[in-house]
Length: 453
Image (tube, rainbow, N blue to C red; front, side, top):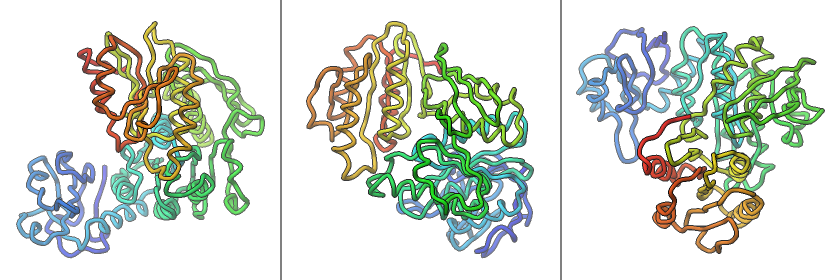
């Protein structure tokens, strides 16, 4: 159950015609996503005024609409709220929900692996506690506020992810959420075009721990070099990794069919887990989630079961298979580190005799570092034993095909090459803006029919 007290929740309330206290399902930004019992948040955009879609929202079952355009507010009949600005209103609404909630807050940031780690945590904790998590990748200021507004009234744990592409955002979001447990999954070159160096990226990410509410900080061992005494002030640090100095040590990893079995040592005890996915780098995400869960008293059996059942979100490694093709859809985002990790996993994957192809697109927000990063990526690709790497995008036009590597200026030229293939095992990965899910659709529909495995 979720409850809204209209007079308490909004600090910029102008008027409302509705019961002052209502129970609702979710706060929804897009009128097309509204279901019965939802609150429709109408916002003015640069090109479209969301207030004008209030009729569609009500037709789909909206319980109430939040307006910031008096013209459309006056046209609506009942169950309506008028605020000065919907963006400020949802931030106020979310803050109010946080203040009312008794849930323990776990907030995850990092260059890669945020959504996967968050989903693992949620699925583990749900086995034993009432839990909630932010929707998909709602990790910017608006998404965080909506996620807070959607916290159930009675919940024990809530999991958020926060992202950034400019300095100061992580601390700002952390001060809003006031987490007790903070996670930095991994520092990598994502957004390096905006920050200028990995060190500046690390400074931004670790600002999550500058908030007084944080009592625990979980990191991976490779990022300990970025830690200083100021970050650790009044906080317990947990290091996760393969080394002997790790607080949670990944002791061994074994390949199993379609996944991995691994052992971790934590608090002088050993535990064995399994994940059913080809991405080996998911083990680090899982180990962070395991450590937090064990520290919070979640039973081993629940953690084991949740991880064995785990499947990633759409576009984050979800696997499709039909008679001819195996397609690994990792099209949501890309960085040098995430691409090379995925390529390593594909190189070791047994694909039932099918040829293996990695379709790699351009990386966003690396302005000024393109030559350096792509050159490293091409050099790495040459070391793969069993993968044909197909780079696709305008920036790759200047490179020449060699060994196991081919370059395509655009998707149309890539499709002509793919049309010649009868079958294969394909990894598809690029930054979200490149819309490489179109290539996934092409590969999965080419052989008619698709099934998730």
